[in-house]
Image (cartoon, rainbow, N blue to C red; front, side, top):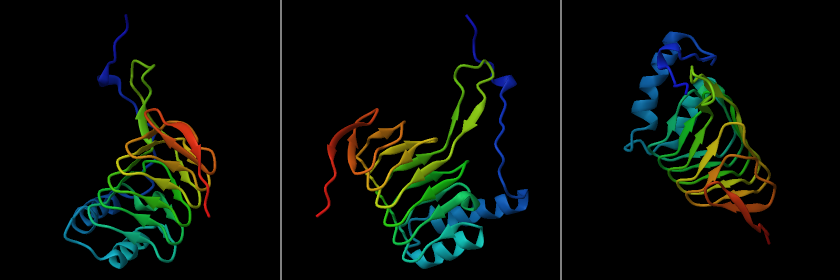
Length: 182
């Protein structure tokens, strides 16, 4: 039986920024984003834009948010990013308008190819279309598109695309009910 050999580990990720930019962002992320004492959303939006993120009007970013690479982030208008959200965007993450990322949810673009001895790193983009709500402590994996106004329930895990106007729950997430907006 073959075994994983971490000595031969490979990655094909393109960071998309110079080493100095990465290092500066690392410290900005620690002091201004992950810091629970920084409650000023406007300064966070400014810093994200400064580092190459595309951010729309009215975006709210709560304390203790962790964003891997702002230059791979696009956020539409009037989106809410709650406390302790982790956007691990090794690939592009595109977030639409009026999206709600609840407390502690994670957007994880990266993983490993468990079928290879070399355990190669792999990464795929995430798209959250307009009106999506990702519940507290829920996880969205790379390669997933959450279609318009879908909901991923509390602590649920999305490994596949979510259909529009459907509420999903569980691990792995399954459709449970249609979302009706009055």
